[in-house]
Amino acid sequence: MVQAPLAPTTETTTAIVQRPVAQLPWRHHTILLDKLAAPADRLWYAAKALENGWSRNVLALQIDSGLHTRQGKAVTNLQAPCLRPNPTSPSKSPKTPTPSTF
Image 1 (cartoon, rainbow, N blue to C red):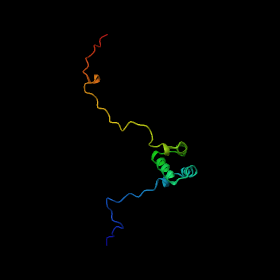
Image 2: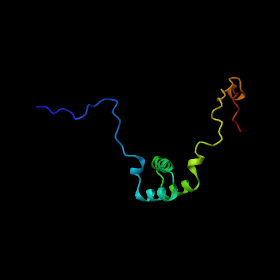
Image 3: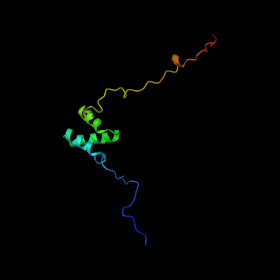
Image 4: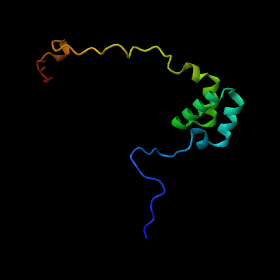
């Protein structure tokens, strides 16, 4: 007699993992509970602490500095297209060898 699997295994099955809050030490939880009122903010900081490996002191500093409100607001020019190097630029011109006799 062959036992049938309890649940069919397919490629669409998602991995079962703990939420970020469940993976943090208890002292991280106390900082999140003491410093943040909104549950969404607590989850965001918990995910970032786990992702970046923050200690509890770094987590407290990031909360105090308001990282959640600053994230993604940096001035950047990454949306501008990169310029391609000009093939006739001086850096691409052939160089004449310089004599190295002294």
